[in-house]
Length: 128
Image (cartoon, rainbow, N blue to C red; front, side, top):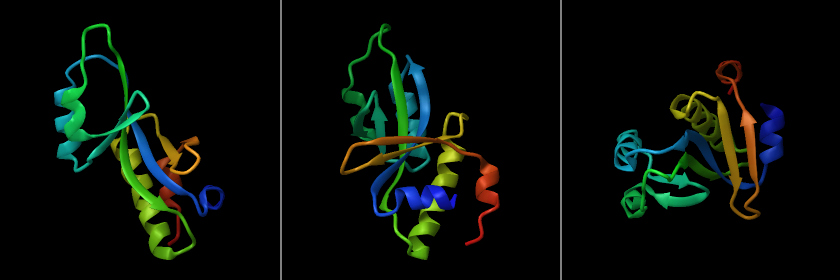
């Protein structure tokens, strides 16, 4: 975990979790479920949107969507409060993802995306 924090140090990042891969179905139900959990931003097929904008997406039976939920946005530094928030966000991402235990970090400035396979055991062993 220390290596991950060091790697992301000083970056302005969004923390995302994959929710649905190659989904074709009712986006309204998906948006309602995501909103019920208190999340307000999504990334659908690479585009960031607010949950309430999901109704503007035109769908038909041939469309499939990759949907990621934005868990948090922060600038990671050595401040204990920021690290605590980062760890909390990782835990939330693992709970609300698609079960793959993948967490996505998106750099605001460079638009680079970093995908990490995580384990809940990692978070259980962290000493704050």
